[in-house]
Image 1 (cartoon, helix red, strand yellow):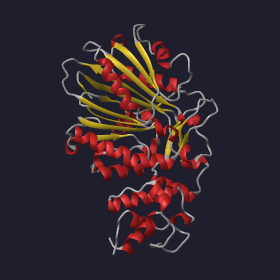
Image 2 (cartoon, helix red, strand yellow):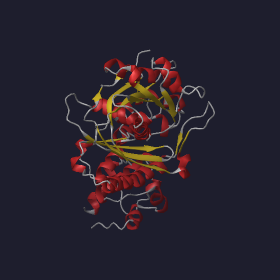
Image 3 (tube, helix red, strand yellow):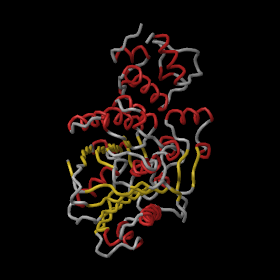
Image 4 (cartoon, chains in turn blue, green):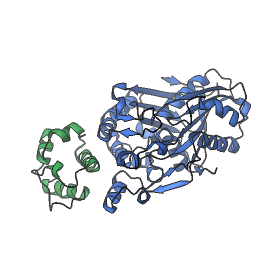
Length: 328
Length: 77
């Protein structure tokens, strides 16, 4: 699927102020901790306090972007809120955010529930609905997750991995912008139980680690190769490959299997853990260097559903803001 | 890669302390260190050295490192 006439113009990310190191989890022996840090690669993650929620993180991420950009709020015509951990079921969060962010009453608002592939799914949706806008108008996407509130502290397979955070992404319509963005998606609901959070308030996230590991090592990598080949992309000409940050070890295997130079596959999981759909924009925010010449990029998101998606796009016109800590 | 060198490096990679060495006859699931992270490291070690992806089914259906290598068509001197 190819789309032109839009580009990512801003990315801003925030994390909650509580940084949790592995020793604070009280779940590892010293030997296990060292082995975990060597393999999975996570040394800390940021977790929300009781008062911080997906909505409050979303507001921080969006206000950060709005304050640092010169975007006129009346030009934001569509607002997408993406999360698996919304504060409430009714009303839907994007409508709350329209008011909280001071966006016009005419804003089209929509919530999307998506997992670790959320960033790719969300920007695809943003690019699609941007086709209905005029040049200079925007879609604002906010991805926000507080999975820490849904973790069983005794479950090593989840509580050690996940962190919280939020990112806001502005997709700008420009009818004269001819560079295409390319998207591919896959969905396999037959493996839906592999990563699951039931509806009950007291439910915690469960994950069948080995199944998910097999999925990433075989299905996600073969899909990536097909995406590259089908769209005649040259890995050598891509500036960066921004992959979902699930596990440092898996990212290393991707690099080997897909023959991607290490310098082109940034990793930030050491500090932030796996932040689900937030991980790719947070990765961009945390590894971006001012004055950098990153243009052509590939995104790869994969996770619950099971779902996985790939995109080739450009960050040539994107202003990336460094991640900052939320302050209530 | 020579077989002895392969096992020496794998032994160090998975940080085994319960036995003094590993070889073709080592039943990996019987190791004290066996857990999901250890299996992940073994999978990665095979990927890095042989460009071969080992799945959970491969680990389940094989008892020893020798069986595992044979099932993936890997031979070492």
